[in-house]
Amino acid sequence: MQSRSTPTPTSPLRAAVVGTGAIVSGSHLPALRAHADRVELVAAVDVDGTRLAEFQKLAGDGVTGYQDLTAMLEAERPDLVLIGTPPALHQQQTLAALKSGAWALCEKPLTLSLAEYDELAAAEEATGAYASVVFQHRYGSGAVHARDLIRSGTLGTPRVAHCQTTWHRDAAYFAVPWRGRWASEGGGPTMGHGIHQYDLLLHLLGDWTEIRAMAARLVHDTESEDVSTALVRFDNGALATVVNSVLSPDEVSRIRIDCDRATVELTHLYGHSNTDWTYTPAPGATSIPPPATDTPSSHTAQLGALLDAHDQGVRPPGSGPEARRTLEFAAALYKSAFTGETVRAGEIAPGDPYYSAMHGNHPEWSPK
Image (cartoon, rainbow, N blue to C red; front, side, top):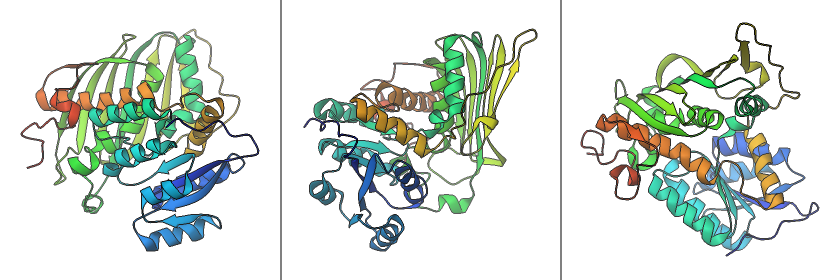
């Protein structure tokens, strides 16, 4: 089935949400309201009838509730499906949306393995619809500005980078049944927390070529890691460190890139605006002006970019090879950490145990 034709400006896209918990009510719903002239929320799906009813009251009139995704897709035929359920459900729900002809915007991780991702890519090819993953940090004006400056060469050649997601999660956080388990979350902070930050690092610096990593369970009684570290080489020659932790009382999200003519730094926690970015010129170099406007990173900003792509009939950002590259980075980090070997981009292919599962069936890390 091919995706439907581009609607006219007087005919907003029909959208549905799947899952009505905090991420949907707190982030996706405000994003939909911010773009109400372009997209209309017509349906919501949740297996919990009480939670669904509460969301319908919050969303307002005109949102029909369903407890079954297939029934909703058949009845409503939405143009866009926004998915905010636990990670193990993402791939199958995104597949269902694509096969119905709808575009999908899904919370991270889009899939729990490269094998699952490639199945989605095949569905995109077959249906003409697209699946994007929520990586909202790419879409703030500060990130757009930094990427333009780096990619244009204005800052000179990138040389050294640091990417840090050092957060804190207690035992109660992991008491939620699906957290910390390979089958339901796909991994620890490498997949569930730091992925936003190193996705932004890849977005700024481009393709990575090799990775050497370590991971450990130092505190939490989980199947997956609670900390990981990596050394990364990029195609442009830059070397980077990446740290993903849920053991850090002083929480921060940080990226620093040292280029020939300036150092660019982003320091924030869960989202950024222009004031969270700083530029330090090299001796004798000129200062870097800020962006002309200040657009915070948000679901609203990413949804706007997706709607623009839909209007133009082109692949949306945060999908296709871009999204796969970030997932491959996660798989390579795990493979390197669990095997002690350097992993190169492109080497995890069908037949490699890390292609079908992030733990690669490694005896120490696979489920007992």
